[in-house]
Image (tube, rainbow, N blue to C red; front, side, top):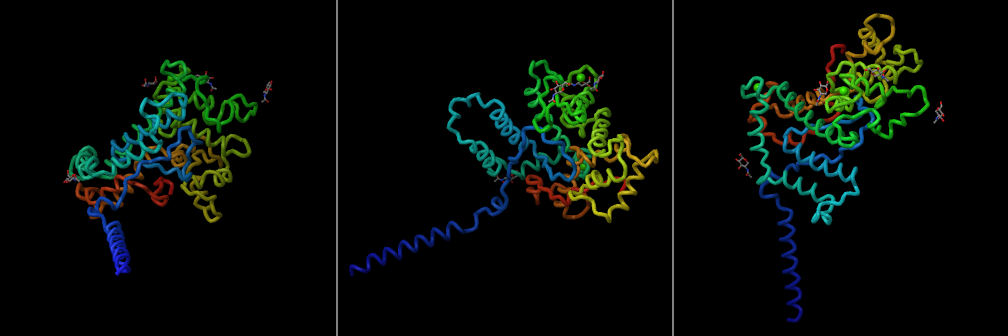
Amino acid sequence: MAMAKPSFLLLLYLTIAVVVVLLLSAPATRPYRSHRRLKLRSSFSFSPSPPATAGSGAAHTIPFDPIISEIELRREDREWERAHYPEEKPAPGMESAPEWKEFGNAEDYINDEDHFNVTSRILLLFPKVDVAPTDGFITPEELAAWNLVQAQNDVMHRTKRDMKLHDKNRDGFVSFDEYERPSWAGRIDDNDSANDGVGWWNKDHFNASDIDGDGLLNLTEFNDFLHPSDSANPKLIYWLCEEEVRARDKDNDGKLNFQEFFNELFNLVQNHHEAPHESEEAPAKKLFSDLDQDKDGFLSAAELKPVIMNIHPSEHQYAKQQADYMISQADHDKDGRLSLSEMLENPYIFYNAIFSEDDYGFHDEFR
Ligand SMILES: *[C@@H]1O[C@H](CO)[C@@H](O)[C@H](O)[C@H]1NC(C)=O
Ligand SMILES: *[C@@H]1O[C@H](CO)[C@@H](O)[C@H](O)[C@H]1NC(C)=O
Ligand SMILES: *[C@@H]1O[C@H](CO)[C@@H](O)[C@H](O)[C@H]1NC(C)=O
Ligand SMILES: *[C@@H]1O[C@H](CO)[C@@H](O)[C@H](O)[C@H]1NC(C)=O
Ligand SMILES: [Ca+2]
Ligand SMILES: [Ca+2]
């Protein structure tokens, strides 16, 4: 009988183990909750990156929900403070908190349906988006307009933060001397004549952003300076075109011939990553001659204007692309717009909008 007890215990342990394994692997009691986990973005870069061009893969997602945006910006602000003011000690009691903790807590918060209920969020947000006109449907234009406002709020928040960094004398303006260029942009006192005041973050860029010409950038002007393609300042848009010509003008004659256009810009205008293929020469020639308004066989800065937004995508385009993508994913009855019930059936489309490269497509009149 001495043998029976251990084998009985073994059997008991085995049974317990099997039950535990079965419990752990059982489907979640609320499968709807667990099928997606909402994510916060964590890859924001704090130093101005080299100017984004189409096809650079810099897909960025605009948060649909202002609460998500606020959580992301707060988290970003804390990282920004740590990056720029590392000597400042964290508040008492916070020293031991692991870096990831705030992030983890925020993500747990938005994934806890008792606290963050996507159904009630959509019920609340729908009437704020359905405004032009208020008819129970969200059109691509309404959703794009909503996305644009969210994007502009995010951009302005970051500009205010950067303003603190660059406005050294705290007078509310950034002078050219105060502005500290990103390190990749090279030094301003380079004797390279090609770099003499021209190029990104240089004197001509600054000047074009200075709408009233007082030599200082206020918040609006500084935001334009950081985001020329989102600016309504025609001087700055023209500067962007000039800068494209300058950067692509291999023979330095101040304008673009067909080969310079084809090798350097055509793929960006078309939003392709790869260098253009020979078979694309015919459509490229057509586009070139459509753009060449004075028919002198060259493109000037002014003639690049109709396609400059394809080369440097603006928040308008991201907002529109994201709206088109969300609608294509959630529009069950294919009427081209969203009803409240279509949004409630697919809430995660609005909370985890990841859109693939294929969904970027520019609709320009020259196609
Ligand atoms: C989420 O909100 C909806 C509508 O307000 C409600 O019916 C549902 O019970 C809520 N879910 C939870 C888990 O609170
Ligand atoms: C730039 O030029 C000045 C004078 O023209 C000269 O003194 C200086 O050493 C040069 N700097 C560089 C980095 O070549
Ligand atoms: C900047 O603009 C002012 C007038 O607004 C002009 O006098 C100055 O020469 C410009 N500087 C550059 C580098 O373009
Ligand atoms: C900045 O200056 C421009 C040009 O004078 C003006 O239109 C704009 O409203 C100003 N922005 C702010 C935030 O003061
Ligand atoms: Ca509507
Ligand atoms: Ca100014």
